[in-house]
Length: 433
Image (tube, rainbow, N blue to C red; front, side):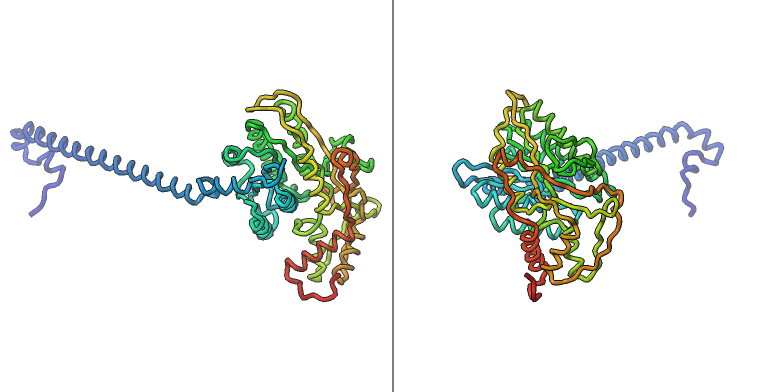
């Protein structure tokens, strides 16, 4: 038997029947359709409600999951932050160290903790160079009771939470996108870290109550194309030779503004070519050591008229002395809740060794310590932002907090080589001095 189609039911083919029953049939079908539509509407409402409930529950689960897996937050986390920031000496300070898993940050954090100051570290562990080295530094810090939080400097909520948990007396701001040449490959990373990140930190600090005193890492690169030596803090710094230098110069102008408007005590430190154990793999002395040991050639740049490049190489222990001296003499911020109550200290210091050494001589010293001859490839310096020489005038730092470097390049590289051979498994190598 053939089943009638929907069209057959609504519009029968029998003319007589259609004439007699049309009104009745139409009314009956209308009610049937209305009933069907009402049922579908109710089902739709039910499905919508069910879906909304599910999404709400899923959102709750996701939020809970994010909370449970977050790298910061929670009662236990706050307890760790307070414990790490605990001061253990009379007149000590509680210091937030940004870039704590970095080269300078690790050494400064250890030195602060050793003398009894409270220290909490922050680092984003980016992959500019091998993150495993940063993780190893973090393990070293943890072994000395220093908490290192993994987080980005631009995370204002994280920074605000840290200041909510601990009334930091000082901030040692060392986090930055480093390197002169890398700026040509990834310029945005420098703006993100060195400018935007700095502003985010300053915004949190100026709103803190009490406001901390801030010491931060500028760079000798701000002297740019200056030819007058040695470089002095009074010299012009408006001729940067690289984007990295430009972001550091911008940082100096920005910090001056926050000091002027909000009463933040701020000290900028212009580092001169820092080297030593746990150093950065992108630095020349580090990559030279690696390539010499692996039998690979090293590239040595030379300047105009075949002049050797020279750097004011500064050993990490001397830089640490300068950082701690700056913290100890920083003075207090004068603002409260973002409002300035009076003038606050604003200072800039060179931290260098005052004894520039030519790069070929650096290689000679490494060869003596490694007992391996380097394969040298000497080329003209490309236009990548590098400068031909650096030389620090440190009289201001000497006068203000007795800064005096004590480690020459020969001694410092010897310590670095010993660390390098140990860290990278060359312990059984014979004849190393």
